[in-house]
Length: 447
Image (cartoon, rainbow, N blue to C red; front, top):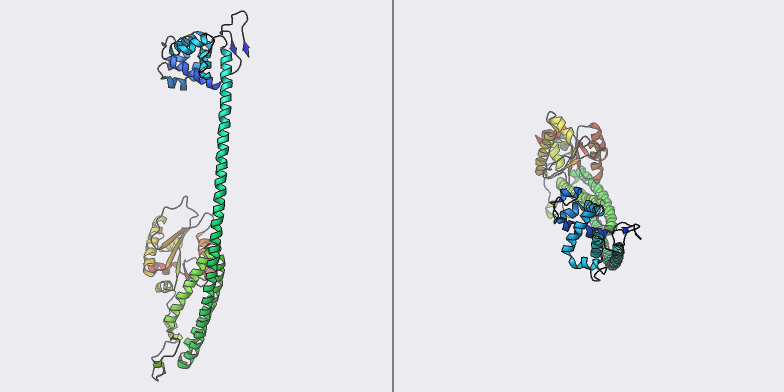
């Protein structure tokens, strides 16, 4: 471990450290050099250290540590000067090292660093012993940290297990509550089915009474019966959808729930509108209806057809949007390029959305405006107006495809109006159950 040069006394200057200086000892040595650095003149400093003469001790240790360690190892005169400063700063420690008996209570790293600078006899052993002591301390500290980390992980594991048990109990309680709620919903559904049967019986009675009292209104009653059968079919579909929704209640609400609820609202609104439109009588015969008198004339199907609006009449838009739960889907750029193609795209969008917001406020209908986003370099920064949903198609998807997806997402029977001049779009949405309207007709209504 210790090498000596031949022929010299064993005073410590001939000893050579055969391994790298331990990191802890090196930091203490650099700090000793940095502290003694300030007591030397610029002329007394090695050439490579003169540029750090004005640095504070901490900055010297940070920026000139390697240079000071190298100068201390190679420059004997510089090491002697640093040793003199060390003797002045720590006379007790240096005196004990010179006498060959280091203080037992002193920090081994401080003893090794001072021995490295002063180079007394046996300094290599002191440096080596300090390095081994530091390694043992690091190993003990790492062992303590490992034990502490193990205890922490065990505590976290216990907490996780406790949390898992409590969460399991909570989920079980929620499952029981969901089962009870499902049973209650089944009871309500059976009650609703009973009400429907009573309603059907009442409807049959109403048909018989209507045929007896209103012989002259046979055509209208026939239309009412046809509409009632259609409503029964829709009610049957609604009941089936509601039953499926009740089964899925344990897993949370879904898109199908929304579609069923929207369809139910549409059927109810349509039934109320049909009753108002046909002026259906009450369930039972009223005393006044038994009095023989002349009733006012009624409109025939020919009269109703005569009042129908033209396909190019903008009033047809209001008539369609007045239907229960109506949804207007607008092919944005198709409408703007039909009405005002000379304007920039941004101004086209703003003008159309402002007009659609006024239409939504007037009619109360749901309005969705679709723009083609395939050519956009970045998302459009746009604040949608109140009452209008604004959608841009994703890359690789055209606005026409997005419109067809919106139509297919609606439940069968809901009034959906699509404003577009594109014949392919109009034919496609018509096959899906929507009502196409030309862009020019919408523009006339908006203006």
